[in-house]
Length: 310
Image (cartoon, rainbow, N blue to C red; front, top):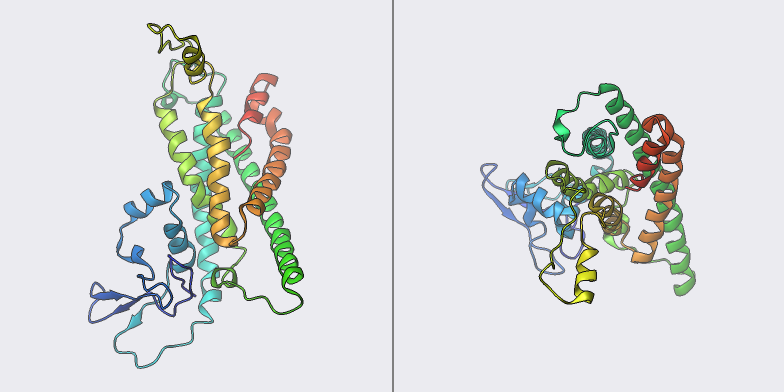
């Protein structure tokens, strides 16, 4: 069932369609009095930008409200929407397969362009023609992605049981008043959320792939300054001292994945942090297994492990 993107309150319909498809009226939430889902009127580019910016409303729109049937002005009564949740499961899994295959291919290309040992740092990453190395990279990325998602799904299942047990212990044996967003939870939302959360990471990594910083010429931004402490502080941001790709993939990727999981789990950030750590452990174990086969030597294998965390 659709929910309000502002307060997550359940609503029967998101908008009402009148004579034509473009003649519609957005429904108001009965709790917060805001529009239930203003993203219905936004185009795909706006959705993509808000997704990269990690806005919570666009996550709720894409995960819970996408594909929801509108209410027709000619209808005299509301139909039962209880079976729509099960009808959306199959299209959701098909979307996961298409989106997962595309993003895994993009991730494999980005990682191959940075970790290909036969490519010089001065050459453009678009000029490589090593199909075998790229195929191995794609298989390795696919294995790591599957392992990470499986680890997160198992950890989410355990976390939800723990949250339910803790809530019953704090409130007694009485029935827990579940939130509407928790009531609409489905395990198919977990991989879809992780793929949506990876847009921010892949977008920045793709930019770093096109405009790669030089690692052979360290910057000296404070050459004319005579403040040693400030000079040491800015030296940390030097290209020779900071691996921007590692920071974007590990730190930003983990934060965006945790943010997306918090939207669907509706729990404390500590639980989502533990879930992401469990997924990292599973993926790192898979990366250690495939690193030598993908890299081909010890140096490439170590570089592969350095980028194994999503």
